[in-house]
Amino acid sequence: MAQLETNKPTKVRVNKRRSNENLTGWLFAMPWVIGLLLFFGYPLLSSMYYSFTDFSILQSGEFIGLANYRELFQDDLFWISIYNTIYFAVFFVPLSIIFGVALAMVLNMKVKGMAVYRTIFFLPTLVPHVALAILWVWLLNPQFGLVNAMLGFVGIQGPPWLGSTFWSKPALILMSLWGIGQAVIIYLAGLSDISQEYYEAAEVDGATFLQKTFKITLPLLTPVIFFNLVMGFIGAFQQFTLPYAMTNGTGTPADSLTFYVMYLYDNAFSYFRMGYASAMAWILFLIILVLTSLVFWSSKKWVHYQGD
Image (cartoon, rainbow, N blue to C red; front, side):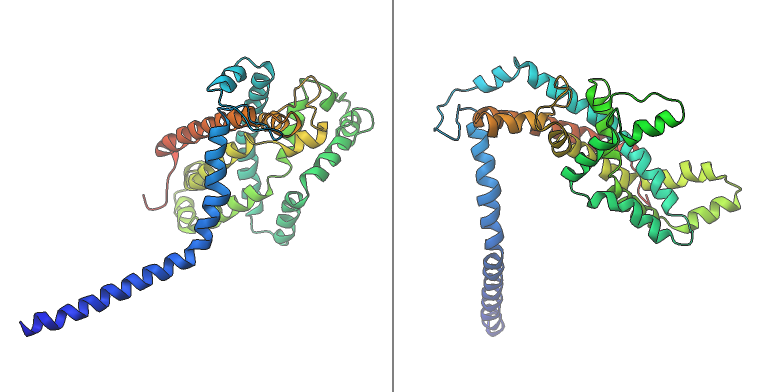
């Protein structure tokens, strides 16, 4: 009995100390929790509600149910913006992975002064997107642009690029590929994480460079490729700054550079149709959610981790 009575106050003190520690932890976390609810949770729930209203900045909206969504599916420019965005994502994301991995493998070679070369390839990512757009508008000018001048030097007549509905999106993909330095850095980190023992064993077995690339490097790099694939699709579907800066928000020529987020922005801040724009935002969220879920589901079949 005496032992039980002695242990009881000890347990009370332990429980009280844990309660104090939990309270202290919540007090330290409260600024972050309040910020999360105030700047993320409230706007998220508000946008969901506004998507069912005709709310604008100038006046409070009335509840109109699914009218915004029905109007969206009958809006031709809505479908054009979806097509442009999907076109960009389908071509840019795979090309960014191919060029990013290839460039990372080149920059991973043991060559004198490689740090300088890595810095050079990373520098374009530091250029502001507006300045980048202005630079490429000049480079792709069909009359006096440097790109067409170089093509003409080898006997190729350059296309009109941003003046053509056919070449405008490939031109934008070319600009975006110029700034994949951040992805290259991530690939370099993944390459440095691959143990050299795999390559040494492959050399003993007489493996060629291509065999080592496709049997060792790429399979063990798939976790990094998977990460950049997910982030690439999310970023591609939110493409905004480059096309908006190049076309002054018009999406010319013939709306070939009107991307989904550009049209969403115009509805929200040019036409003050906040309810309509909120509906577009939630459709974009569902598209990205479904696409990301498919990538995660497929990753079980092609992503390989060291030690598995």
